[in-house]
Length: 171
Image (cartoon, rainbow, N blue to C red; front, side, top):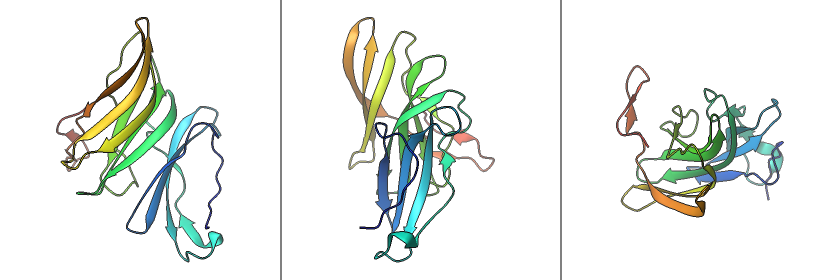
C-alpha cells in the first residue's frame, strides 16, 4: 500500500478525501509552535510505489486565523467538487470554524465560526454533504448547561467575487 508520512498529532486527525486521482489530507500539527490545521494534496505518479507520490507543500488551512486549530474534517460535494472543511478553533472562545475551497483544495476562503457561544467549548466536528447539496455538521458542545450534541445545516459561501471577496450566504 502506498504511504506518505508527515508529522502530525496522533489523536487529532487526519481527515482525507479523494477525487479525480488526487487525495486531499488535513491534519493538526504544532511544528510552528501553535496547533494549526494544515492541508496538502497527493497525486500518485505510480500507484505501486509509496515513493512515487507527488505532493505540494503543506499549507495552513486558514493562515489568517490567529488562534489554535484542531480536529479537522473534510468533505467534498460531488456535484460541484467544492471541498468543505471544519475544525475546532480557539481564539477568544472555542468554536467550530468552517471554510470552503473552490479550486480542489489548493486554497480555502477565510473561515467563519459556525455558531460561537461565549460560555461553550465546541469540539469533534463532523461534516456530510446530503444528496441535494446541503452541508450538515455535528459536533459536541460543553457549556454551563451541560454537554450536548449539536447537529445543523451549514450555509456555505456560494462563490468568491472577482476581487477575492466573499459573496453569498455564510455559516
